[in-house]
Each structure stands twice: as C-alpha cells, then as structure tokens.
Image: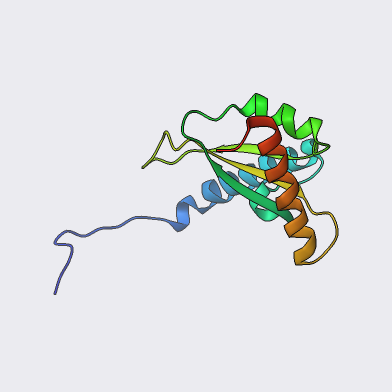
Length: 125
C-alpha cells in the first residue's frame, strides 16, 4: 500500500541548526523567567494544605470572603474562582489554607476553620 504518490523529499537534517537554535532560545527564555521570579510558583493544587470547594447561588463575593477570612485569622489563605469551558458561570471558589501541622487532624482543623470563617462572614445557607 502506497500512501504518497509523489516523491516527498524533506531535508529535516539540513534544518537541524534552526531547530536547535529555537530550542536553545526557548530554554534561555524559560531559565531567565525562572531566575527573575526566584523560584517556581506552583499552583494551589500542588501545595500541601487544605482545599475547600464552595459553591454559591450567585456570583461569589471574593473580596468579602477574603476580608472575612482575614478577620478570622486566616489571612494566609488563597481564594481562587473556578471557571470551566462547559460551565463558565459555575459560581464556585476554592479556598486554600497552607498546611499547619501534619496528618488528617490538621487537614480537618483547617477545613473547620475555613467553614466557620465563611459562616461567620456570609451567614449560613
């Protein structure tokens, strides 16, 4: 079985120096960015700690949530709004609290602290 009816002749090895130059340029840009930032910044999914997913009936009040968490002593928490191509108006946020202690008890304590702060700030419901 013949896939190509014409004589296809591409000189890939003749263009190797261009591809190597492109690769080295991209590596240099990535390294410069890494050095400029000082470290790699992992997302909240790759850090240890507590993640609490909260769904709201309407658009989540991010600033109010952030203020309420700070008032409850959880100022180091991170709040990210979740959006998805399938559901762009999901009205969901993820609240991340850095790891404090070890084990499941520390994670449960973090979850309880976040939920208590949300209830105190926004009320129940």
